[in-house]
Length: 458
Image (cartoon, rainbow, N blue to C red; front, side):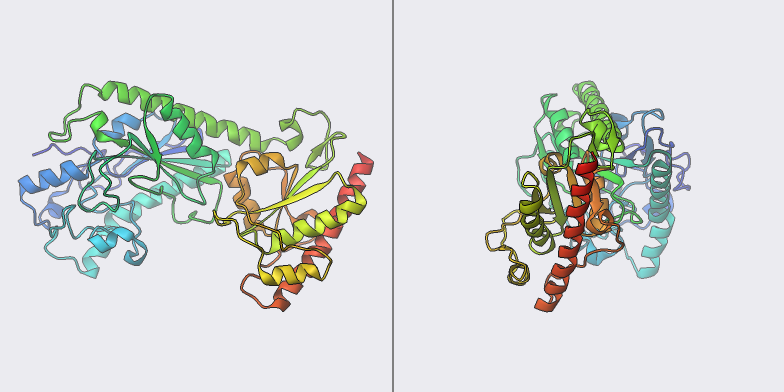
């Protein structure tokens, strides 16, 4: 039998896994490195000892706790203390939301990686017992560390550490036989654009072949923050096991030390980059451009705002109208001012403005028929002097995802001393679009007045 590997001091205590408080707002999450199966749980599995050993060999993220461990000075660490064959802490508890549940591998597995029955039975009561004993305490620990990291540092970076077999398992959704050395997993909300690029560059500089979200995708975020708080960043890093171990025996290979060293170097680069981006984002925009004498909270000295970016969700309704209204007014007030627009969730394929948006804007003499949507990017954020979003949620997402946005991003209504959001008229009636256009037009007029006044006073 394989000797159990876990970070627990007692196989009866699922909370005995390591927990180190973060010193720099970084949490290292290691969910699948343990082979420990408590005796009472082992009795409920159908596999023979030999078959169980083979399944653990396939399903365990061997030595990831050693490869990624950076010590208490560098990161808070949460290690799941038992094997994922007991409970998988990276799955959604709701099988309807978990793609792997269709293969009998939701939060509590009922099937093996090759499709054989794993448990003698699993009723609702037994499933809940397992979740209460292992899953929820683990996530409570992860959530607490994230809360503390944000309280202490104003942000949190989760590095979700894994390894993967060099060949696809029968249960894998991605069956391509060609696999990268490193897989970088992301979340559309919690992974700012610069982060996976930084991670990719760090590993490629060490001679590794890197692919995003393949053969596995996504990254973990505590559910209380999931898609709600952009201050929580997360990235998954998966290492091909063939680089550091013999996949047939489970033993370390001769390359283990080199892989460990390179992972440590890449992690240090990723964490340093996150710290730099946080420092940049916390400074006033004026200081980021190197000017002296800040005022107004979004430009410096006599360097007036020239480029304004309006931001909404899909860049087919609200932000195109705001862009059109602003450019129409700016032509008369200050022709050097230019507005652009983008959407946080805009399609990768440019789309036209909606028919109702075109109609509503035309009532103010603005033609949106030539508009094509674009997704918000780091380049657009860097280029703009002022970012104006349609809602507070948009503002929070921009601050969390893009370096340098904090300090120069406001909601449109906030910038014009008003409260609330500009509601999305998408899929609404023409009347809904006309109401939105009227609200946006008034706010843009006040924004132009403010910019003109502050440029004169500058």
